[in-house]
Image (cartoon, rainbow, N blue to C red):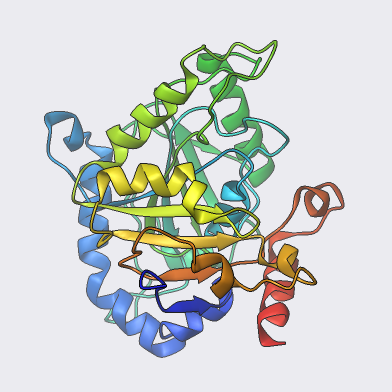
Length: 313
């Protein structure tokens, strides 16, 4: 039990408040916004292709670990293709821009493409762009079109039969629900190829290579996504993060599907008591949308409200 970290169990919405929402959030973003915009411009210019590492958050999880639902909760919008089996089949760079905050002088802040955040916040839907190259993103008209475009561009390079590709896809989303983050969503870790699919026999090695490629830099924050229903000692996501970050100082643990523990007699603390790895950035528990919720039409906003209520009881 010496590895048991401080466990903070709150939802994405509550977490925002816990970190200092409202005016404090605006003040902090006003101070760091020029730095965030500079990092985003460097990403867009392809500076990392020269070997220079930039800050980013890399999301690591096994297939069906709840990784996509977690990302949707962070993003605030339903933009990711969903389904059973391997859904994320190529690295997905997500640049998220908040349209909620004005600049320090009170005028609307501008995004990296020159648009006004203040004007975008009044739009019915956030502004989205997507492309194979970070410096040549193309706008899409709606979130539904963005979701379909991500799927189509994934199929174009990875095939339509569950294949994977190391070629990244770049997405920029600016909206009032978005936090100021740059995320990299990686294909879920898989031990064996799906029968009858285009997945290679060495798919486990290939998915681990992607974690190494995007997560090895000391500038990367690692998010290890672990379902509450498994023993953390057997988690491939934790194992992969441990190889890149042996001390755990840049790894955040996220325990998903906490509601599935209800009635089992176990708690999050019981699950984490078997964790062999120190999460230097702590552990956050979540209850996000399930596959049945998505089929049933539960929105991201409704899932957030339900999650808040869950953690308040």
